[in-house]
Image (cartoon, rainbow over all chains, first blue to last red):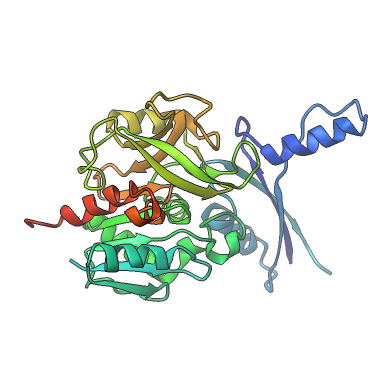
Length: 82
Length: 231
């Protein structure tokens, strides 16, 4: 089973990387982009197939290490591998 | 008193810290590898600067789970003095021993330069040899030193006099120009509520000898050593 985790900075936390990319996009004359936020994408591959175990472990892993709750939020998607 | 300088894979200011305590301040000092789980012989724990685990994921995020950190947390609760410098400060916030987090510098640059630090609290064991509002010149060297915390935590830090150092102008004025990384309210160093754990981004171990032109850093390290006298 594969879990796709996204970690993003909380709203209101300055994202200097995102700002730099926004400036570059503007320099390229794309007019429509108003803001850029950069986060992290992490894939966890589990050996087990017990969905609730995978979900519980994923949550705990995100809270404990993948995201820093002071400044980041996380979200995940579980993908059943066939 | 005996000093432990914890060495994580990727620490690179461990030798400077060791030199300061062992050679300049003549204290028994050991390097302690991060796999150690017993720090009973130590009265002071130093978490040095560097790039533990290559700063992977977030600065300090992986070092915080090194075996030694469980013992560091236990010792902090027993009142053992702990100083975390730069990456050490990041490890202390990641491990929850200090509130808040250190995030990317506002200007996206690695800043390596001398900064002025105003001593906001000179009653701590880390600063009692400084005068109140004294301005120290101490170098910084980091990309992720932008201190952030919630408004709630900020109020608590102020109410308990936990803000020890702020980035300031040479005359001690707290200005946005003097803030090298965008830290909230120019915060450069904080202590925990019980006052035995300090985290600071600037490097006092890098200017601790008059031979190098400026020894302001020694005031902080000497404060610590002096605090053991008479115990």
